[in-house]
Image (cartoon, rainbow over the protein chains, first blue to last red):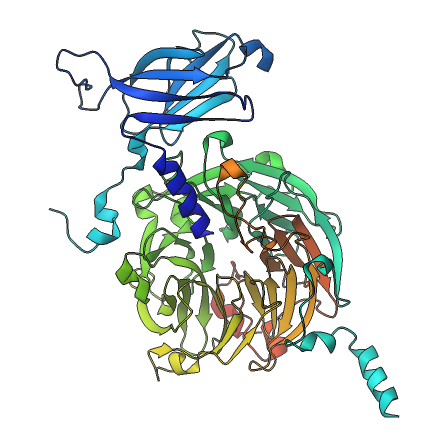
Length: 156
Length: 454
């Protein structure tokens, strides 16, 4: 069982680069596919950060295979969201469509990108089915103090 | 005359004689259907759709609480059944992780119920991959006191362990001799965690929940691995200690957890071929043990723990016997109700053998629950439907036994929940077998020392 989990993790990790988020489809729309790329939001300093120091990104979506929203139910549009890893915090990023769309900003240290079908393009609360999703590359980071190689070495 | 006597013996013990010969040729895989004559099927229940249905299974043990819990594995759910009628389990409640389509991992693995101050709880262990939602989540705890009224079942806590993403694989809820209800959990690190369940369900600060850790001393720790896979905790009447029997990468180890805040090592069981130590279950008196190693062609091994328990040696490296349902497959979890061992044997379904003579295990009965194709077991990823190559990890995953009436249940990865009756086994109390009344079943009201008194 442990071996299967490791293999699955390697497959997932192998497809990720520091700014690219491969998106996975769900059973709601299996034909949908695409990726998101994190690009620093506009800033006079070149690298955009929030006031408390978290990187701030625009998210560039390249999507394909999205069916007409109405074919999935009472929906008119697709919305992109940023969610915290525990799925407690959600923020609307903007509408997306087949082709290239840039929305923003995503500024959590670790987050999940989710695309849903929605009835209202201005919705601030996610209600529709998940169509695509993927984790930010930063979700793979963890404290190196917990790594076996560093275990036993006191911090500082 | 001799022939007549033999025929009479066969009539008296119809299922025993042919099954005793572990050297006989195993059944072909096409023939692995149905069961032996001492095992009666009560009911099979498809608890989830799809190719993968269940991980572990847990039965409540008090009369008047006829409830059973099935961990839904990659379906990321738990299902609670009313088994008032053991031949017709009735689904009462389904818990599912929120937004299951956003999660990745092997999901709902192991469930344990416990009781504190008259209220009943169920802890569902969870495993989600690092880099995906809830990778830090180890378990969800439900208050199930209201059952069979499922409308009042509610989630009361989530246990998170951010230091090592990947959740809890196996867990053990233990009524400690000091009165506390403890929760032992495996993590992706070379130790097992110990939580105080009372603090968790009473809403104490999260920082106070974790009270201790049991290190894994076996050799693979030096390779940067070495986490526990499973464990069993029991009171040792001879030494009046609470003991932890751990199985992990590198072998097995026994710890004194009378003070769970400061465990002390007693001895290890390590040798060649034990790197993938998986399960470690002692007899009620701690004298013998059954162990599993998680690789194909590996038998269950039987050990005499006396040299370790008595302090004569720090490591035991020679088993006294072995048992296998079929040398070509692999047996998984087991429950010991001495001298009987109930096995969830992956492709070989429910298997039951006796350790009445620990050096000569005897097969007593079986029921093939997998109904699957050999070596087409679990593996891969969600993208290929978790289909592995040459994997025998499919079929009977979990087994549990209800002590007051002898109900036997199997959770099968491929086919779901099964309930059984093992003929002549109408319940289990260790004292009926010259043993303390100790098993994985906890006496939540009186604690483990109650096992020493009638």
